[in-house]
Image 1: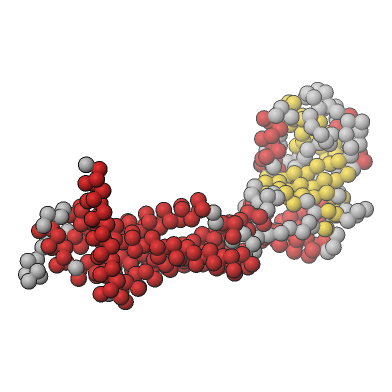
Image 2: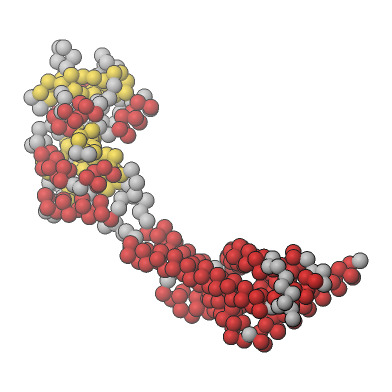
Length: 395
């Protein structure tokens, strides 16, 4: 029985090859165009994947994992809180909305103690033109038990410049030394000539009180600044901050040099990939249309096959095998041309192009091509084979 199956299969394959040779001989131009369509599709698909891989790898290589920007203030210098406030308010709204923390630090001798240095921290945000607290700090402090009593400052108090404070201490009654020196008999504190109501206590690295940014006098000297973003810093945000800083502070601030992706090149890669895929899809569609033309010219032979007992499914399978037999060597030629171009040209121009390819990659690309090919070609063959037999056409 196995021998009969093999014989039957070999006979069908002989018929398929005979049909292909007949097709190539009688319709040389159309056959050549079909082969060129497959070769071009294979080349474009493999070439496009190399571009895509190079594009993604280059983007990942240059994409910043940096979410915090900490410019240095020239040693021995400082900027006033008032100037820093004006600078922060001058930043583009898009830049400000992307920030989760704007930080400023002042080294003030009145806050020095055995429990910590004289650092006075200021953390805030400006979203939609309104001041607010650093929600990240508030959330972390509450979740990790840094708030030892009461609460953190809220957005309304920050926005309106309310005279409230969170002081360093292990409880509402036990404050650290840095904050105790400002404590009044009624439990408030007096700083910068203002009386602040204490809404909570905290236990963290710094010993100074935390107060709304807008309540701090404009002449307080700031020696540290920083910006934290929810996502990676963009080129536009970086340029906005550095240009405004130069406008307000001249060369007083030194920003780290950041390497950003070349967006123009990335855009070109992206467009080339889409164009290549579109051309590839059109090539496969063109193959299907040309082959359908050939099937229409062979309808007499199809009618004879159907009369002799060939089922519709068998006819579809035979024609599909014909397409695949034509496609396989043509696809191999197209993939081979891409390998030649990759080794000779593209690997010298694009850093990661050659790394895109492996035997597994070629197999996956071929599988994808065959899948798309079958989705387009099978309905076309089915439509041609499903036509009613016209006996007049048979003579």
